[in-house]
Image 1 (cartoon, one colour):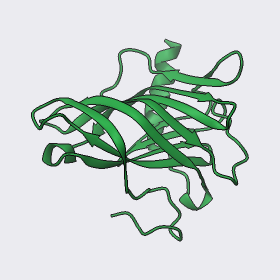
Image 2: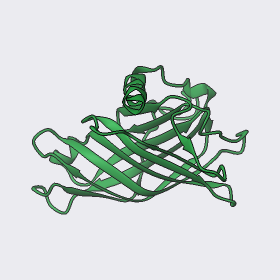
Image 3: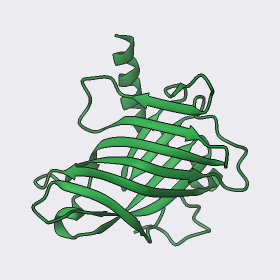
Image 4: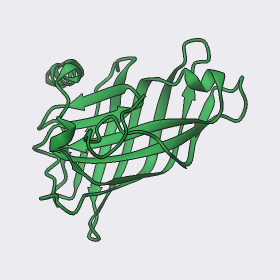
Length: 192
């Protein structure tokens, strides 16, 4: 019962106000591997990022994922976990969340962040209900992927592709030039 209540709070929290891009500390996000599926009728998809790395910006004072709000944006879809929703491992280096069942059709189902000694943070995540309709019309498509922990942000454009137009399978292969909706207005051109 408590898990269901916490999940309901996390799902409703997605309507929270997004951070001001001018106050974010911009780092680097690299999506190395991902896969998923797409419903060709609706364009909605499930994306499983199995290997991504976040490097905080030089001005960062560090992150505390267990105590800070988490935002994951895939294209225009933003998923939010309020502060305190990520569980912390005994050694304090791994932070994770798994949504209780039954799971919502559009939600952040799982998130895991592991702090590495070299300063990088390994990330795994699973989201569903992501709008990938552009993949019904063209292949590959460039999808902006953003992870924000507190006031630290990492962004990358990810190439999402499918083996063929009728296929439900998709994969993330490489990076592409994309516009971050969280970049300060004075540093980049506005997103289209």
